[in-house]
Length: 487
Ligand code: AMP
Ligand code: MG
Image (cartoon, rainbow, N blue to C red; front, side, top):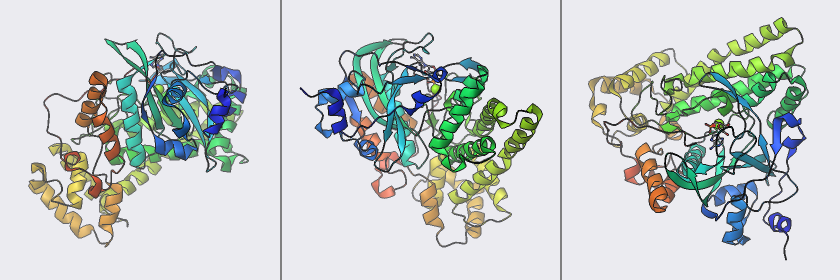
């Protein structure tokens, strides 16, 4: 009889757990809690081959047993991570309450990725939760994270979803599921906050070196590596949020435990892409104050970066006032860097590669017109690229026609359309289509719509590959779209 580890090494799994070399306060080793009757619902073959894993020789039973955590390679020691976080501004000690990292996979290209199960059972950090996840939210995370990847935005990715064959109790009993998530690492701003709260400076210093080795090896020997680290995390996060703004993405729950050191989008809960433009767009049913609204995302990431920096102060200098002074000037550089990156992104959305003094005005005028008329965000830019593509009535508006004339005069490079095509997706996972697909999967177990959506979101910039129904502006609804955390 073949032993499990042999089975797993044959398929290319080479998991390590370097994280568990860190001080024990940072994790708990434990096994996933087995589930009754796992069935693989979706498997991402493209991602598995990037990871150097080939599942094709596994029977469907072995595959589902693996992806549910019922049977995983022994000796590595899966672990749940401890962390803390400001949730809607309130500091809380948290941790992986329903997730387990089964190890770090080294890819054929030599990159290292955490492989993690989400929904794999209770952990020491579960607080009141059941450690489980429901099928709908896990399929949603799968779809949204893959959409993000194909939009060229840093993100955790999704390898698979399995149904567990067990029910999870939410408002009603729902089908249970486990998502296999892949991340450059799962270290969060809140992981540093956790150590700061415990005043464990030695562990923090070790975690910092760990993150630097994994994500920013170029600064390992730098004399002021803490500040360099903050600068690099800031730069990754600015790039991330600017990209979210580019495609109209609203994360929905930008708590500090949902901001990663590696700069990937993580924890797809109540997120959504906006249809109609609104700077104040909020979809999350629990975001009553609009704290994480579309237009608040830049200020929020700044706030989160301040929390990360505060935690790291003891590592900057033994003299607290010196630490504060250096850290302050790093944090103060945020606005300039962000605004520059954001302006550049907006310029590219308009096909502009050079800079001109009037650009700021041009961009501002467009956005204030959009704020007043609330046209479809994606299709406003699609209309600029091809006025026949999206001819919603808003685009007949005199102010827009006038603006467009000014813009056309300003565009002076021959290549502008190619630049715009690379910057402006013409296809995003539309809220109504996502809901339809998830509803079908949850209620009657059919995956046709999910699979189709999953396929089309892989070509968000390619009009030739986009079926027309995915390009139309969705009909306006009187009922505001609401999203839920799905915990
Ligand atoms: P999230 O909103 O998904 O970022 O989760 C916030 C925190 O709640 C994290 O520490 C999660 O691990 C935890 N959590 C979410 N759902 C559950 C659940 N069903 N059982 C246990 N912990 C959970
Ligand atoms: Mg989270």
